[in-house]
Image (cartoon, rainbow, N blue to C red; front, side):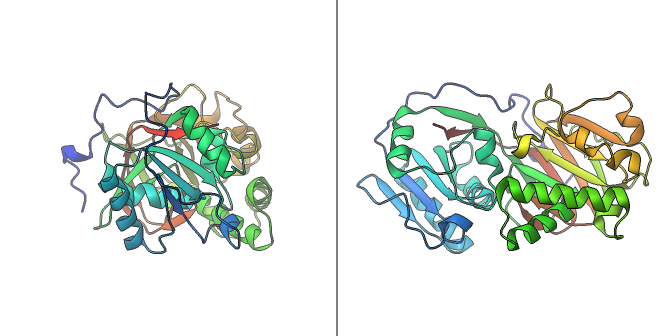
Length: 339
């Protein structure tokens, strides 16, 4: 079990929120490692854009052990740039299994978005397709944006999870609906639009009695002070309808779930699925603020770390994980190469 008194789980005070900054001086012809996920939606049956050169090594690890070995080999060879060719799930896995290897000393990262949904790519303003020559040109220019992932430590013996979008409660139902949309051929913004429309219909009009209506049992506290995050009491103090946490700044289809003024890990909490709340979800998700939101059970805020007691699963960058006690904190600053 996680030791609530352990200082190892405390976020160092000197860590700063994600910012954009000029890239430091680096070699542009240094060693480059490429992780290519052949299972990613747009990688299937296509020729890889990245090819082997004297200073470019391409790997296609198919298992977690193979991914760990590949990242260890890249670290030992001193790569300057790590290219991740896949979707958000591929980035999550590379960061999760690379965390114990690179620690706070990551190479520059570059995402070539090839998944069904690519929220990180949207946040970074990446093109949907990068040719090999464009990738090499961007590396040579060296323009980067800095983002910090969410790191989730769990109460069982697994490596901490690294990712960018954490959700629980009705968010899990949204992911399930999105997978259904994928099966019918809808991807990216189209899939998000279908998911939002179906979820709102079920919540507002009371269609069904599943997680779109009931949420999930959970308690969420600040990591530093142990104080419960705001709760209106609606739906039960130990239940939340939806919980969403992220360090990203921009989201697909113009969604703006968080307060723009907040930094660090930002959150949106909905206490209950009463119609006065769900009917306002389009306004909430478009960034509109209102002073009566907390009374209705709509809470926005931010912090450097949180503790969770979850009786239901949670989702991180599109994949669901089992319930338990979690500690969420910010990871190190990562430099992502952008056009």
